[in-house]
Length: 333
Picture 1 (tube, one colour):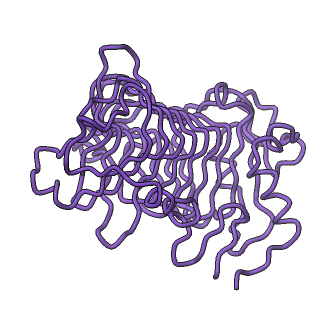
Picture 2: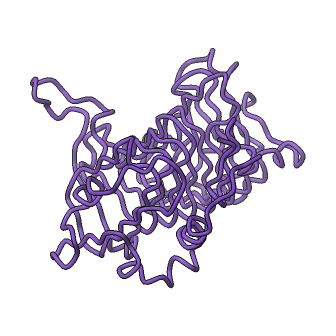
C-alpha cells in the first residue's frame, strides 16, 4: 500500500502540479526563498538558493524557490541531497538560466571537457520539480552543448523551455515527466538512457538532424514516449529524423503527434548500424500532418494498434518498481 501523504504535502503538490493553480499563486509571498537578479529577493543567483535549501529525506512540504523574471548567467547544480525542491519561475519566456559551455572547451587540464560536462543545469536530485523556466545553452553551433542534464529520479518539468542546438537535453538516468514544454535543437537534442514521458510538448527543429538518440537498456521496458506533441521546423528546408539509436534497444514512441513536413518520410535512421534495426524499439500511433504518414516509414519501425498504444500511459511508463504516482508524488516506499 502507498504511504499516505501529509495534508500540507498534498496541498503543496496540488499547487505546484497544477498549471491553473500555479499561475494564480503568489509564489513571491509563499515561497521559502526568492531569487531576483536585481537584488530584491533573498538571493541574486539560483545556485545560492539551491545551496541554502535544506536536505529533506522524506516526503513533506516541498522547499519552493521562486525565481523572478531575469536572465541568470550561471551554471546550476541541484545536488543529490536536495530532494523535494521546486524551482518556479515567474514566466518561462522571461526567466532564463543560460550558459555557453560546449564539448571542446578546454578544461583545467587543457583537454576538452567533453559533452557530459557542458550542461547549463545539472539535476542530480530525486523528487525535484521545475516550472516556468528556460534552460539555455548559448554556445550555438559549436557541437555538443547541453542545456540540461538530468540524473535524478522522479523529476518533473512543466511549462519550461529548453534551448540548444546539439544535445540540448540529456536524460541520463531515472524517470522524468515533461508537460507543455518547448524544446529546440537539431542533432540528437533529446538523448540518453532514462525513461521519459513528454506530454503536449512542442519540438522545434532548427536545422537538419535527428530529434532523439535514445540509449535505453534492454532490461528497461520504456524509453522516450511523446504523447500529443507537435514537431515543427525553423524553415521549409529543414528536415529531421524522429530518432537514431545511440545504443542498441533504443526505445522511442510517438503517440498522437502532429508532424509538419520537417519530418522525413522514412521517419527513422539506423545511425549507419544495420544491426541496430534488429533491436531498436521505434514505434508510432496516429501520427498526423504532412510528416506523419506511415507509407514511407522504414520497415523496421512499428505502427502500433490502438490496443498496443493504450499501454503507453503515464502510469505504466513512469510507475516503475516503486509505483511512483505522478499526481501525488507517492511511492510504495
